[in-house]
Amino acid sequence: MQGTLFTEVSAQESALVNGGVNDFRFNLDAYLFILGAGVVFGVPTLTAEETNFAFQRAISL
Image 1 (cartoon, rainbow, N blue to C red):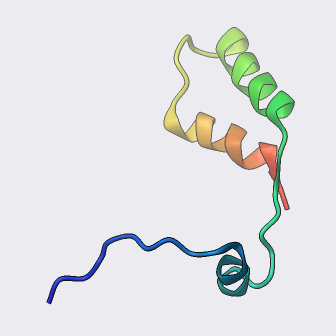
Image 2: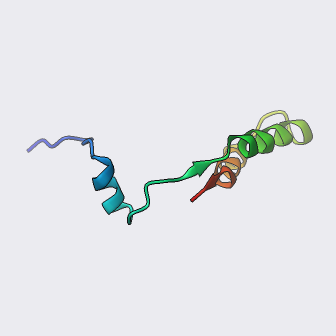
């Protein structure tokens, strides 16, 4: 039996699975500030952990 790998869901179905929360905010200014500070004051290239840290700090529910 072959099933589909991805299925499209509506916003209502997504809200049900997600516990009713389907709204989040992404602070682009904070994300770019953290990345920029990491490049200016840190090593020339950012690690995946540093980029993930910036992403996590920029998301607020």
